[in-house]
Length: 109
Length: 116
Image (tube, rainbow over all chains, first blue to last red; front, side, top):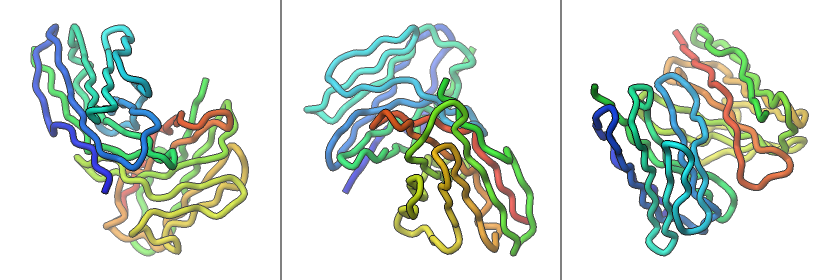
């Protein structure tokens, strides 16, 4: 079966760095996405990785290792507004997104 | 660019009535649109995939006669929840894939449905 695993909840301090991990097992791979979702709102796109390595975009970076079925989202200089759920999703061989359950990130002052 | 709208943003209806939710891609054409449902504190659950001009493909466990999907044009898809019941209360989100891409999806803001 297809499976996406990520921690349910994480807590971090304002100004710090946090890494959210995601492991996956899917039938085929056409890229991995990270989305941010604030409570009561739709997800917003953060990053897309299809090749191994690190993609940096401002305070957010995303890493992918296809051989390990592993990705992480790195958030630097955390701000209170970063409190949200972070969803990992993998696009399978049918170009369908398989979603993780999301990681709720709580930022404390 | 790449804006997707949903209407209404929230709706309250009585049990047994039907509710229609619209999803529009405002500045691009979308061959494929996706309908998701999200219950509190849970991740997105794909309900169905709709392609313009053809019947929607429903995920296992989703009743196609209850959740009617019409994708009549390259910019509009509708989801009708028929004979709604309180257990249908949820956050319904659509996303649209531009014609020119295989992987991008842009999400609408979601519609919160409450069935009383």
